[in-house]
Length: 378
Image (cartoon, rainbow, N blue to C red; front, top):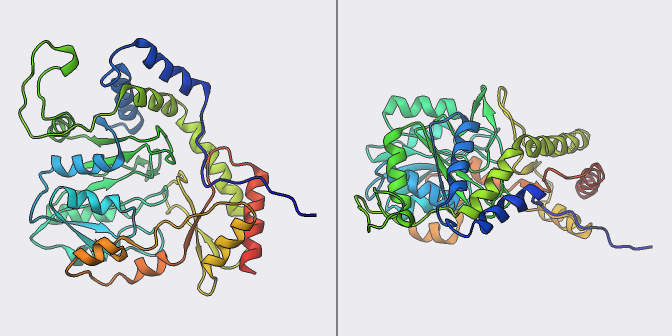
């Protein structure tokens, strides 16, 4: 007898009464929705969690990257070394400030920038290295920092997917001159949309704050009777107080959110131990994983689309992050004069598949996912 299976979504947002109450508190205040006390509180909570001096919240992870690049003075004729194996926002942010993304290959195990490939791409025009920590764990960040220091160029971490993860006991997002975070709806801490720039550099933080709010250097626009002093070119990428209120509530239970993801990932890992050709993406030695995405790499010969179709038949969502890689997308193929060969990027992009992951994924659901993937790869 056929019956419809309950859907297993790719992600579900963990929402609690505290999320509702903090947002309600912001609304019922009846003022300071654009720049209110929850914005300051959310920034302080991020600083405390990362043990970093400055957190500046903005309206998305993409604008966080743009603001970080702007703060470093990146612009026309500059080159920024990035992976092509990333969400397209990493490359777009570079173009949005007038610079040119230079794609380097990734390494096989963590899917982050290959130090050797980065070294080969450095020129006199290289203004920064912008590594991505993929899926919830570290790239080879210490080696990349060493390269950057040797060439006297800054590092900008794209830490959108690793909030709460560590390498060698240090939080990711704090290894660089400046880093970008994301609080999009599928992230560890979710506010729907939102982001932050984090840094220990006072000057960079001040530049980000100016850029965030039209270059205004004087007191808050809504609290002053004066028009204000504008000392730099800026735009409006502020985070609203309502969004920050939600961020405060989510961040208060980040340990619980990460613990739930790790529990679900461990159940999936155990299930895949006995399945040939399905290899989960795991943290490096001395690193932790927060499983913003739970991703497996399929062995050569396994047809990924067949696995996707089999999961769909069982009402289980899945998604490919990221194929095509950025250098293979239509826009960048049409607008890049030259792209180096990226064999590992293209191979990995053709094999990876992300499976459902969220803090409340049940044992029955993880079992169903594993059994369905096993059936597909037989």
